Image (cartoon, rainbow, N blue to C red; front, side, top):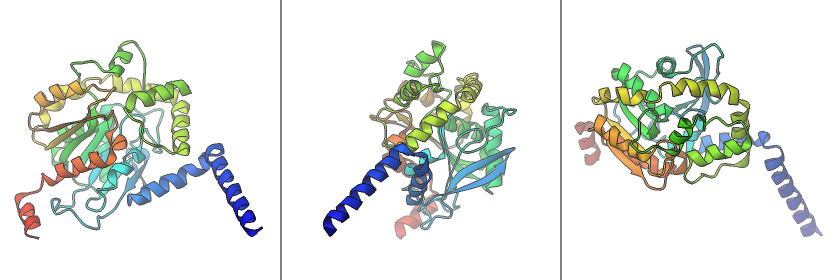
Length: 331
């Protein structure tokens, strides 16, 4: 009887858990996010900068600082349009032991404030990045970004070269005209806004566009993401249009970035920005380290976080001063 009672209670708890998981997903969203962040040694914090309340993840001082990073320069990870800070957590996991890693919800996105009377074009984004770094006491950083975030990183490096140690495009940056139009290019040219979802079908189509192979997302996280996308559709349209006016801005300015070390990891199966964009990127930045990622779409830090982080770590190690490398070999 005791065994029957035990299994009955266990079954009831399991059924209750499944019911909660799918029936009240909002109750599980924050615990799941907290668990994943803690596995990467990251903690959510807030600050105020450039009129916005900004939420960000911060791993703090590393426990085993990278010998190749003698100045303890932090890594600042910048997400793309309509994305958010937690998209970097799995990517950051292999890095936080050796580097301080900061991943903000950029003003206007995620949990950070979005103000109706403020612009959200690249000029404003670039200014706000400087204000955020000031608020966090970061004088110089390795900047890595995906899509819009990569473009912000490059534009900031062009304006403030002394504050940027390196620039990494983790996934294709926005603003380069690919010789072969992408699936998203064709949708835009047809007058659509493919990353603005007004209904569940449009949200599913957007997910298919940005991922070659969708990563596992717990239902409470996926549900919250979809609800946020649908609820913000009207406001997202304004931000989309602000970015679209600078559709090829990066290509016009990227040639000035030659004094910085640059890494570009471009998904070989990217349907947002076709991989043929590596060709003009190579011409504009012949010193850059360019890598195509097989079987990966537009968000490599989510589709292949471990491999992508390993490639980024190797890039950072290659930036070490010769004295630091010699010391590392002696040890």
